[in-house]
Length: 464
Image: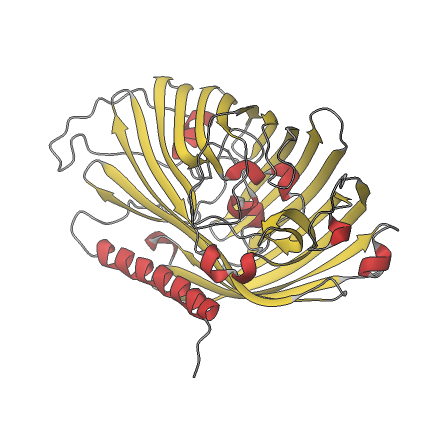
């Protein structure tokens, strides 16, 4: 029997994740390696960081002030980059102690099959996935975090894209991607973070990453609790959070009480289509973000950035980007939780050009332990680049507005049974679209898409 390369890659992803869970189970049985009690899949992002001074490494730690409130959520660094969700948001992970170090492992893996209507739709089996190992320890008057993030999507998403009606942005084989979502890079993040505890409610934070996430936009869609059960990307990705994989990122932030103010410098060009590579460049772009979190269930952000030459197809164009979002999370019990996000993204070329806006509302409800219901609703601007399909841009092409698209997604999945430290679920989602008059002759009046998927996710011992 012949096994296709992409099928083998998808199987390898599942096996790797299962091996990590089995290794975690082995660590749980080892002396001194058990996970602290109460830390589980429903563990909020305000993670307890109690550690014995010195541990078994012989190193003496200088403990700074114990932080509370938003400062504690910032120190947890449970999302990508320095972005924040509400402090009560669940953070599924494996966790153990090794001397002074707290070791953590986050991951989310989907094996999905999509079927779409419309002459521009497509069908495909693929896997979207990411894996995040982390290590944290007290160091001097603050806390040091080392974090990496990887994705096998360059292997599990063939032809450098998977079908997603009305999506546009970036290239595959030198041509514009139309009605498809590009895979993530193999290296999504490689970062060091240090949080200096000035007092109980104040942190001075530093972030340095050859590949990382600058301070612009909400938490990116693969890492938001409100989108955690959805295997595909958002149509507003390139207005809202496409900077979540950037090169040569440096960020400084100041947290006081319930406010966080950040500034970043980074390389503005988005990753190219060679997803196994790390493309570095000069720090030529900047951003700033204001985050407020008045209670542990709420957080909001407003950010602004100037991006130098972000798009490969339009290398002479710089871009202004603004985003705003509000996130709400509510835990009703240990096994019941509702996470929601409202977001707006706006891009505009510097100088002549046209603005593009995207609006998003998404929610995920976990109920009766094993059940998840989720929705995503979007209203996005599309441009004339989409009308060309995957044809090369003609000489002298000028991008113009081509109308608005609304997408309505509803889905459900259910955990079937537990492998050791692994939640596995089967689910499906349906997306219906409404299109403007300029796009309807190409796509039809009622295009739809269906995705059936298997989801795998590690979870902590206390969540059995």
